[in-house]
Amino acid sequence: MNYRVVGFILAWVFRVVGMLMLLPCLIALVYRESEGWIYLLLALIALAAGSLMSMWKPKNMAIYQKEGYIAVGLSWLLMGAYGAIPFVLTGEIPFYIDALFEIVSGFTTTGSSILTDVEALSHVSLFWRSFSHWIGGMGVLVFILMMIPSGNGGSHMNLMKAESPGPDVSKFVPRVRNTAMILYRIYLIMTIMEIAILLLSGMHWFDTLCLTFGSAGTGGFGILNTSVASYTPLQQWIITIFITAFGVNFSFYYLILTKKYLDAFRMEEVRTYLLIVLAAGLVIMWDLRGMYRTIEETARASFFQVASIITTTGFSTVDFNQWPAVSKTVLVALMVIGACAGSTGGGVKVSRVIIVFKSIKEELHTLVHPRSVRHLRMDGHVIPEKTVRSTYVFFITYFLIFALSILLISFNGFSFETNFTAVCATLNNIGPGLDMVGPAANFSLFHPLAKVVLIFDMLAGRLELLPMLIVFYPGAWKKH
Image (cartoon, helix red, strand yellow):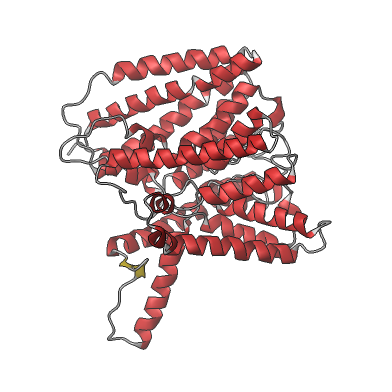
């Protein structure tokens, strides 16, 4: 274990968190809120401490897979632990576990909340919790990759693999730093586009910023107690389109930008993802017939919630906890499936679902034709055996964590539907669940120990399970 390079990365994370914490101070200036002084003080402390610690650059900057995974896991723990402090010091969320739950939900783009009255928060804290979605959407380590130097023998790719969602992560260009820059350029352009369109639709600038941060990061923190229900139908459709777009694999946009249109539209995962959105929306529309006044309102409610759930954004325009059983079953299935790999969405990812179904089909074919030898393919390319194996390991680990988490939080005495969807909502980084954690409720009812379990689930879900598990694996900390 190269402890010095891990410490160097954590120092840079501290610097970046401090730099990003300065932005809420600008909101405090606009609204003349005294809470901004606390954010400014904490930002300066993080900048000073991070700058001081990063002065001692390790001689060996090699980042191997072990260092990459542990650095990413510790970085997200550090971000959450420090990012929660402003809520406590301002007195807006006085209990630290609650504040930690809220900010980890923000950074992991989950959107689950313990707040019973969101509108009681200051503008500066509303901005910070929404902005945390945007920070976590693409990943702070991907941002840092554009700044820290590389070393010999290891690779920045090990950091990107540990933080980026999906069974396989590839570079767009030979240099990982340039890949990180391309990702953030696409992310920033799409963010600016949504801000511009929402402003043109007549939305207030503060609401526009906060909702765009939530859409881009596929988070779900609203700044109104009604989430997105109070906005106009046009604005709801705009948000629906953009959260669907942010759930697409960013490789698709890179291929479009490089004019490789045929390669882009041949992406099996993107086609499957859009087909699932369309099919689920139509099924729910049919199931909700007669519940709403017009076809447009039915379509808007159906496709908004489908897009919000499959991308694990978590915004809501209606209380879907009151929907019929078929619609709620479809939404729970979408919670697990999630968005595309290489997007800002959560869940197990569409690509993994495709790999599993292809594996089942191949196994059936082998039973019928024992002597045949075929390979799993996606987009015309053979899926590496390592990727297939990692998919199986992911699903096994996922269901073990899922089951254990349900068991641990069940001691609260709530219904199985509440416990099941609470874990589903946090492990898949969705936000709302059903029953007592539905879109009209929150997670404040859970015991602090149950909240700790759900915090772990949010972090594990965002980091694809293994980077969080390896932090607690004793063998990873041995020097040799």
